[in-house]
Length: 323
Image 1 (spheres, one colour):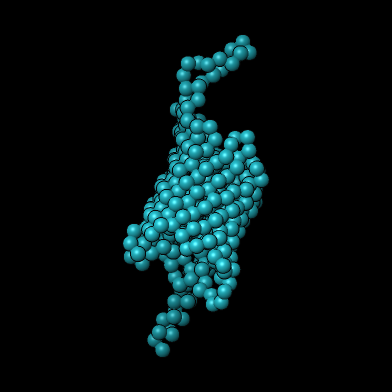
Image 2: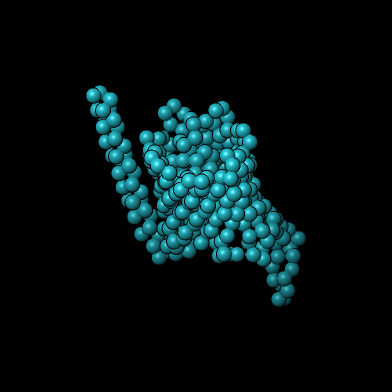
């Protein structure tokens, strides 16, 4: 009797929390959208959409429903509470020309909740300073460089089949002597019902990069961050297959894209992956990759063709502490 009352009370609390969370997401989306209406395309810090880890990069960037562990700090903070041990992940990608991308994440249980931290960095290399003189492009004997960095702290809790989380982050954009800063938050929700039978599914939602404008030091001008409203679904029909589908809407540029990916766990320690990302119009947005797990370690690789710029390769290494 007492147990039944506790369960009923918990279900009411959970329902109230979920309804409140969804209401907050809808309200914030409604506020952020009209605030930047008429400014389509004015987005800064596009590197925030690069993601974390190689697993989901190989699956077209689809991650809202199925992500967990350190990668969730970036994709969906609700997912960090789906891993009950301390986890670490490092990602590296050599992009076009001299551009490099790295991401570092860590998550762990914290009482009845889970916490995580993540840092992402893009280095744009060095370029020579040039200017036109008498209609001739001349080098000025100096160079400039640029970089973007983001650091975030996440908090997540789980209630039965539901989990919710938030990430607070700081962004710094730098090119030559010009520096811009911004602060933002991400809100995330995941639902993973314990269904009976052979067909399972999971769902998730994220409202990302909610912030004020990006404030520049030099002239006070600023652009909006790529504010994103995302929904995701993961299907698990059996035979080691996982199918992920995300829909992403940009609240600033009013663009909607679809990402999808498939993972086949050929063995418990080896996975094949492929994906499609409609937001990438180079080489049709196709991607592929593999994953290997050895005891507590994991190694993931993603391959993304990028047309005349060459092929992009992303590698991530993960380690879980304890059982």
